[in-house]
Image (cartoon, rainbow, N blue to C red; front, top):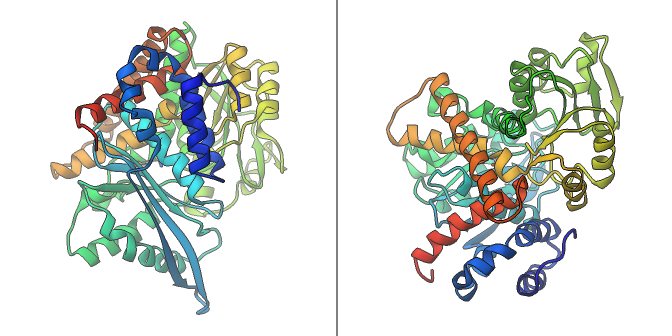
Amino acid sequence: MSARLDEKLDLIYRDILQRNPGEDEFHQAVHEVLETLGPVMSRYPDFVDKKIIQRICEPERQIIFRVPWQDDKGEVHINRAFRVEFNSALGPYKGGMRFHPSVYLGIIKFLGFEQIFKNALTNMPIGGGKGGSDFDPKGKSDAEVMRFCQSLMTELYRHLGEYTDVPAGDIGVGQREIGYLFGQYKRITNRYESGVFTGKGLDWGGSRARKEATGYGAVYFVDEMLKARKDKIDGKTMVVSGSGNVAIYAIEKATQLGAKVIACSDSGGIIVDEEGIDVALLKRIKEVERRRISAYVEERTKATYTEGGNIWSVPCQIALPCATQNELNGKDAKQLVENGLVAVAEGANMPTTPEGMRIFDEAGIAFGPGKAANAGGVATSALEMQQNASRDTWTFKHTEGRLHEIMIEIHKAAYETADEFGSPGNYVVGANTAGFLKVARAMDAMGLV
Ligand code: GLU
């Protein structure tokens, strides 16, 4: 792990390791937050006595269940699914569902833990939770995905509700999956409860700008970090890892603001397009045709595709990791710094390893951690809930305007809190501290629950 913890926090951390064996990603996420909380503990000894940290690190409820389903040939499959309802001090549990073969309890707990602070930073009334399954949607037919989603929801529905727990998408869960999940929820409960899911289709209660929100928000965050340094996004070269929902709309917004995005990736390889990624083509390949990005070079013949290439070896001024956890390590960070990097914003959750974060910090890179930089997605989910509660739909312009305001406020909170707690310019300290304090104050006010 990167930095050492102070004595009290180290004891708490050791206890967490012992009580949650084998959950590496959860340990990493907890360590990163505890590293920044030393000054908070000295200023609020009351929170120490009331064991607020220990309480925040223990989920309020964890649900693990079996999901049996049949493929198109009639073969039976058994997957495991999770919903970790982590913290409801600020509102109903809120966070996505991830379908990926790597999913196990440690991944869902790390994501749920981060979600608590991220959601607090949005200043919207949402608690933190996360769910998912080790089901792999890759290569499955629509009918197989539907049967899986229906089977999963046949158990999960009893734990959800617009005032209880509100899932959304994440890796492997987009509008198609949300549709099947919501449809089964509606059928079992006999309630058209729009606010129980976010990321819905625009025809059935979804919010405009939700699809774009995480990527757009990450770029707005970069914009704010650069403005705080009297710099600007216009004219900068950018590299974005991934090519899913977050990456596509980060590329779109960055291009609109005058940056040149020259590379993106998927789990198979990377594409480099020195003329700037053609977003319309990328959208067609990924969203309509559901193909791999290697297809991009079939039409853009000047672009190159490198199978198994490392995206972080492509020189750039702004790096946006938008793929998955721990995708950018110390070696990558060093190379990026040597190649003239100025700023990083995490579009994915925990994409930078602790070593990578240390290198960026020492090099004075503007580093926007995921809890702040990718909060635009869940913030717009909260706007979707707001529209559902008032049975209203907003225009794209209005919704994007709200998202932009929220990202500006998140940046301001992280920036000012970092300053206040003695780490000017350190958005990791700022975001963790501001998020933690909001949740801690709410928990304190509600007594020992
Ligand atoms: N999965 C997204 C995240 O990591 C969005 C969650 C949501 O909209 O509830 O924040």
